[in-house]
Image (tube, helix red, strand yellow):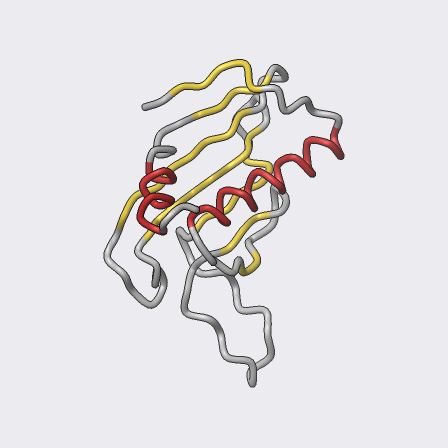
Length: 130
């Protein structure tokens, strides 16, 4: 079983990678360590995105900004910025960050669901690093 440090090191290796599918769609990974804060309590800044061949983001997991508050005035807004975008126009919905490994697994699971629904092959034909 991976230790959290090993898993984090493994995840950090994804920074700058792009995986290209046969269809021209691609995955883009950005991740780095940052100081812990209310918005980033785990100290990991990340953006994992799935794009169409023209570069439009179709789906993404990130913590670049807090998600819009969706509750009423008596529902406290969460300070953390972890969220995901299910569609092109989705402003983001909260994502419960558990671990680096779970984040990556959740991202790949959602990409696979979207690809299956749209008939896009997930065969990776090219992998580029920074």
